[in-house]
Length: 156
Figure 1 (spheres, rainbow, N blue to C red):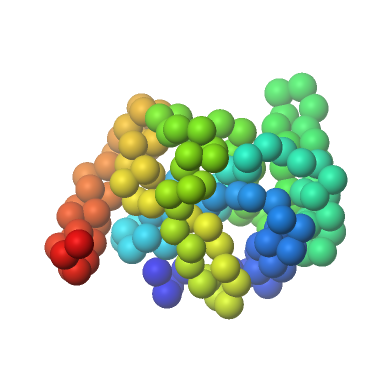
Figure 2: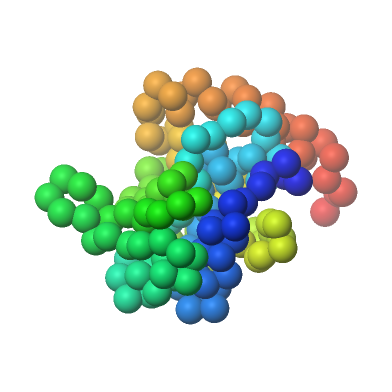
């Protein structure tokens, strides 16, 4: 988890989202890495309760970037230097409602900013439900990370 490093723009984005009270979850491989899985990812997927254009535009501005609402087949997106790996997730396969997943999410201090992260168990469920080849290929690695994590957790 400590190897996950945010750009200064990503850090500013998370600080702004928190200050603006725009609930989000880090999902996908980014969440898995923060939860302790080994691997790589090219993006940082953010799932929002809803796309609040006013808050997203302001958060992007505070991070030195911009928000675009998308058009046609182009989904909403963030852009600007240091925000190029941030993707906005509009739906998450195999998961419960945002509110249910958010209530079970974990808080992490990531590079000095609090972030809310989908638990590894739920990342696995989402990847299984998505059934994309790249997601299915990651499942053995994620399941091994989950088993290792459970083996080191104190008994409840």
